[in-house]
Image 1 (cartoon, rainbow, N blue to C red):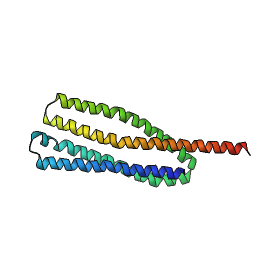
Image 2: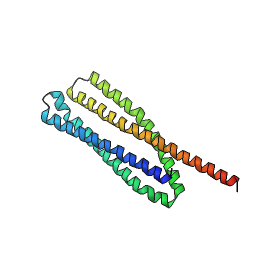
Image 3: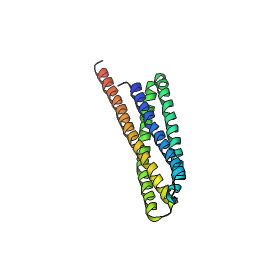
Image 4: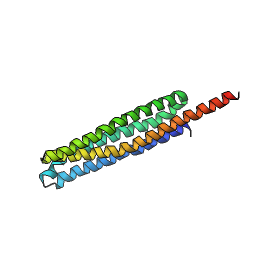
Length: 178
């Protein structure tokens, strides 16, 4: 597969994926309005602010990553046409760096989920329960979306490495018979 095509397909898949942050953000914002308008109990009223904050955070994350990936799609062709080798090397480095960041995410987020779950068990006030449940919810959304993103970047990185291997084999073959 062509390097540029592979890179653009990966970036477009990321654009699609990041829109799910926005989708879930809207869900949290609707939930906040629902708790505000329909909440009668102390616990229901306690969910208003946490779900609002979660919705805003997901909206910021989704909008920011969506914008970044749309710009990346546009920049790929320019960078590729300027210097194919530099583009290839930068994509290898960027994908390796991103994979390392996911290792941290998938260690920290489960710990945060455990802490929030423990807060539910040990602190019995409506506000802290609402904060804890909302925190667990937003972290699960992040894990769902980032899990798919991690899988895509792994495949992308593997394809990039295969391209390098194919080029190396081809170059060795040409040098051997010239």
